[in-house]
Length: 275
Image (cartoon, rainbow, N blue to C red):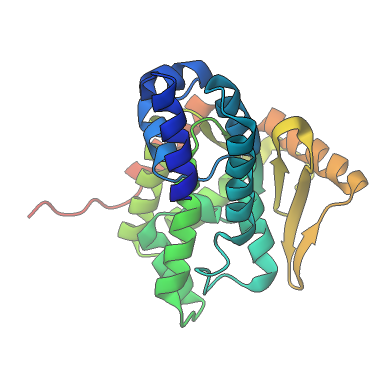
């Protein structure tokens, strides 16, 4: 990816533009353009915008697209040690989705977990490859920071939050770290929404599901995790899953109300001693 970044940088210099100039044209900040030039993978439509803005020669543009497609095909596979093979296609798709809609009824989504909470969860399930598992999950969580142009909307049951606060298997200080992590995500990442569905919503609660939408609505799909692995949607079940998620979303608390619920959870947990 460094070669692609170098080509983009050279094209920008050839046009006499600064990083901030390019960023303004595609609604990115200067630091994001800097990361692109340092070799960050790009969604295809973003690369197309850069090719147009920088008036890249067609032959160079074709090379850029080949490099980007190659990174899509190969990135992650070599470094994924703890992630099950049946989940690796999901990890790859997760990195390219323009919008992610998630629902978890009794747990905190992996992408929303802080490191200490991950460690405790993996240890509780007897994982032997904890270091690799945590590193790979943290990398998934970093997507929330790397791609401010994307939209993430996480719905969680109020009971998922209660499990963190009251579960005897969770160290209360780890629970506090997790709650603070959720609060920071809502404060520092305005493109990430975390909302809770209250107990009294009175809805049919579907199994956990995640919906991926891509640029141009090409290849959209949803999936759920089962005891047999991943269950990906068909065209019909995708519409059903989207309808179920939208129904939950309509009953969910607002972002502000959800933050208030998180603050209440913080107050219910012991604080670390400053001494």
